[in-house]
Image (cartoon, rainbow over all chains, first blue to last red; front, top):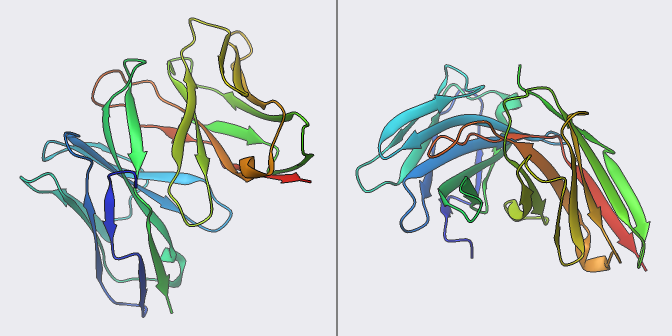
Length: 115
Length: 114
């Protein structure tokens, strides 16, 4: 157990629908990152929050949005879902590592299937 | 665009052999280069990382070699074991402190055979 909790583990929905993925970061970590992993693709950075504020944005579609709440958990909202949104969505939290840089700790992911 | 190019896409190595995965980057501002290991059904986990002030870092059977002038770095797994079979991602970041957004390579699926 990495300490980063993601729910749900699996989600099957239809095109056009909206889903919410939830992430609880590791205790003490203030940063939350969202990544998308499609079949045979690497990890695509979507968005980062630090202590409730958006810090960096990557290749996140306008149909997607996220937020980090005062208790530091984060939610990723995916709307008007398309077949191509089917992927693994990972949340990672970050805290200081031995190297001085933040070390990302990933959750087990939420597998989204859009039919 | 900040990119990290990773090769090969897949790799089959016999038990006891050396596995080598290569990555190249473009952004000279990158200053932190971790490798992540991902087993099926799990999230990626940090394996080993290096900063550009050293050319090599070794942790057990895992070694990162770093060539700053060529903008390349590689992961070497010595005495590869079946338990090392996983997908490996190289990554890089340029932001210190709290904003270390990682840019990942596309991953290498390693299979270690008996």
